[in-house]
Length: 320
Ligand SMILES: NC(=O)c1ccc[n+]([C@@H]2O[C@H](COP(=O)([O-])OP(=O)(O)OC[C@H]3O[C@@H](n4cnc5c(N)ncnc54)[C@H](O)[C@@H]3O)[C@@H](O)[C@H]2O)c1
Image: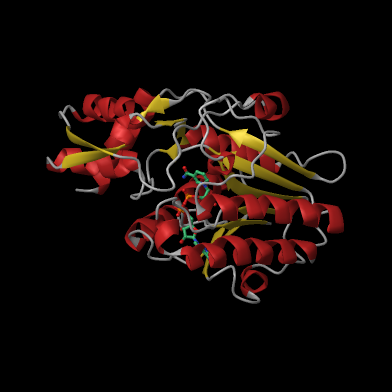
């Protein structure tokens, strides 16, 4: 029995689907919060509901007893913990949402895992944002991560540290994944590739923060979901049983490159205006993924143009 937290979310949906396609029995839990349109979350769940081996429970993972009620700890064999309050900029507006979902939520998952006698592996989402504002990529897992630029990043780093402690105290096998700007169909409306596509198709002007020169290591969702499904099967060796991996493309593109890819995919020229970077934004993200490649054969294969074309095709259909 597998538990996927955040199963109605972007990455959670794709990972749950991948696991179901491989024959797993999956319980999904998600609070369906309204950080972005819950209709999109319900749309993803409707896709997952096509699998008989999928069960869904709407609940807040930070609420006492919610995880146990969704799937008794005695039964769970693996957990993929993806529920979180995501988004860098919103963490300046609503900091306590991050404390609740990311800090209290992660601790709830750890406490649940501690009482799970059959648990083989807890895989959880961290983020490239833990690396802070750097221009000296590629970033390696052993680099110092003690200068987060946003509360979001600070909570993600806190999750890693709590996991390290629980691996040491209770020998819970865990893998943390630092995702780098994951994008694709069924994606997140708060992310630039999604909102830019919507605006370009409506003929609206795009605001390019940091003059469009901020760079991100855009990583296509299918590459990520395939990696997570594989990683669930490979708990860490050694003691403490906790390892962290970069899950990123190792090929950063600027926001201007992103806009050009959307223009090619839509056939529409973008109208843009430049603006200074926003507080919390980092200049660049750039993964060294050699550790995940060596251990899991992680090899992200999807170029930005291909991934954006697939996203735009999905978006046109969804937005009809
Ligand atoms: N998408 C990316 O580029 C990216 C990059 C780095 C890290 N991450 C991390 O990956 C994970 C998944 O991100 P995503 O892009 O799918 O985001 P998402 O917002 O689409 O998914 C998160 C899901 O968690 C749910 N959720 C939030 N608080 C909850 C709570 N207290 N209880 C139950 N459910 C709750 C939300 O309703 C949402 O459906 C998150 O941990 C995020 O921080 C994502």
